[in-house]
Length: 299
Ligand SMILES: [Zn+2]
Image (cartoon, rainbow, N blue to C red; front, side, top):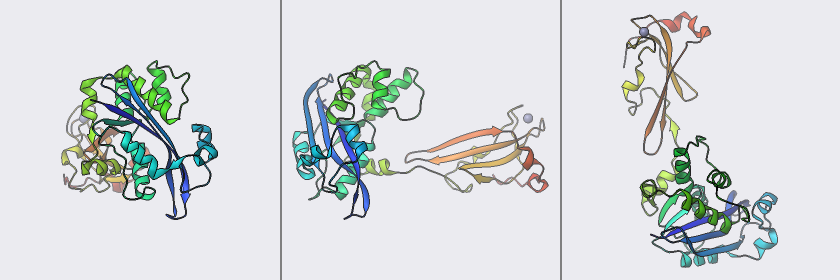
């Protein structure tokens, strides 16, 4: 199997034509890797913006792509055509986090002409893979790790590389991959971008269920056992919904303990993720007699 690591540098610019800000891609960098993750070819094109005459100061500082360099670039359509000619159609394309894909979608929609699209084919989120490997090695931070932080943790030398230039970032990605590749965990993460489900899943925004009677809620997720004696507790208040959590008061028929049972349901594209907690009842609400009236068990 062959691989491509794709790295895009983009700058936010206001498009008067589309009346919105667009993360316009201004550089495409990529490396081709063979089956042992050694580099066999590299690609880099800088793009002349069709949206703005200047790059932002932050972008120039971060990437080294100045306004002059951007203006010396080639038109976006041409850069994508060249990339697609260069890219191996059967390769697995990787990017550091799938945020590049959002940018690609946006650029395809607003800035590329003639229905041009990036040739991606099979895809893997390299950040997700590397972060998974780091987690197995004891790294616990749940926030998305930066490329440079991952390189540091894995002892990959970044000296001599210009971080945030497309080609050098790709070279660092390749070094990380050589450092932590694991076939059994890598292969299942490969996705097919031609599958219509792929972009639906990518653009799906997870949300919290807010109606306790939602059919997708398994009623057993709403019952609680006493955290002191283990007996099944009885719900003694209505469910209330606040900040994505449903909360109700419970009483244990065995040991008389009262507690607050809390549960939240997060809908992702594939799953309904349930989190549950038992908390002490806050004194203030405990004194309100109307809330302490037992309600009939409806679940
Ligand atoms: Zn109890």
